[in-house]
Image (cartoon, rainbow, N blue to C red; front, side, top):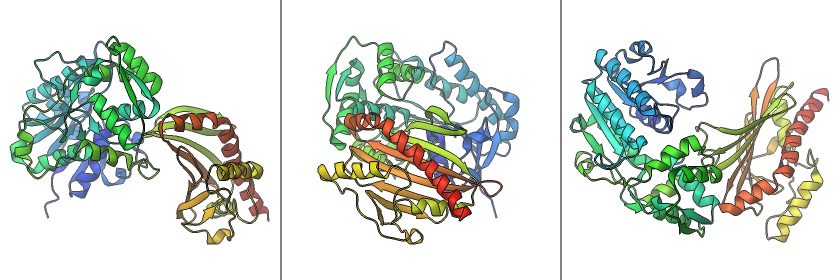
Length: 487
């Protein structure tokens, strides 16, 4: 049987490349990925289903093995930088890739660039995106270049900027660019175009502008996001706010750093809407998703399962004893991950986790849990419910104080959802991972999806207390596990 074409995907540690791969695999394609360091793919659900080859587009000698027998190649390599040699480096990378593809007989390159009229005063960032497409075409390999504006999806940098600004700032001092027109597109529609292009010959050798079903301003995008989240937001325009000042402001109110924010903000000064509607003619089967629905799809991932395959970026890492604690902001969620190696079998550690909160009481600071339950009752919450069960009988749906068991995998994972009154949602998850020499790595992760500024203030105001409780809780589970062995 014909094994089918080999599809090369680059930029797989980024948002688009990582999102595309599961759809290519589902369609039955053989997928090869190019990555500079294969270790960066740890945790990706698709990593065992693809062929991984290490290489670097800035090192031409590393590319021939990558291109061998490749039929189609996706080029998603792009960086956010404001350095003086940024455009030159981008062009060099594209030229190396195109030459290697040409030498290997690749049938077509598929590239995702940015919208923006080429005759307008494009930002350096958008101009570089257009230049990359031109350099790829110079290789002689047919290129399908899609051009898109803001991609709406959990993990898209431009969407995350909209999310964090709207969530965290009730009164937004907005520069002139908030009145600029933009045609956002759902990540699902982007994936639809990228996958279908492989089977649509009419897309070969074309520049295809793609966008969603709405043309909005950036201000309207933020207001619509606020309506969906039931947040009241006021936009106060300040025309003198320069892109540089805007980038520092973005850095202050969002997890994005100025290095990323500055080129992104500069690109927002350009109107980015679809002017050529050939995409609808070439891909008539694709139904465009409205911005409202695209935002709702992104928000549906605001839970631990939704971000499971995301690449975590730690805002802070510190050490308690010999154990690392990582604090992260990921796709609208605040995540704190504690790890501890416990010299006990996995079954014993898992049993200790299940014992917390049963008829034997809580392992650490029971009086604090009781106080939190009393406060919750006063504001109309569920309070501190009594739980009567044997640890071995714990099931999904059981209540533990003001927590509810929402997921359980025997000897591997327990996830709890807080049902007390909080401005957002809180999950507490425990994972047991077998280690060497009858030891177990216990991973305790707290997820908080804050709602609006109040949610963020709540979390950080109570953070010192949370840190005491949760850091000692994982320690208590370890001690309880060792006690079980001795008994």
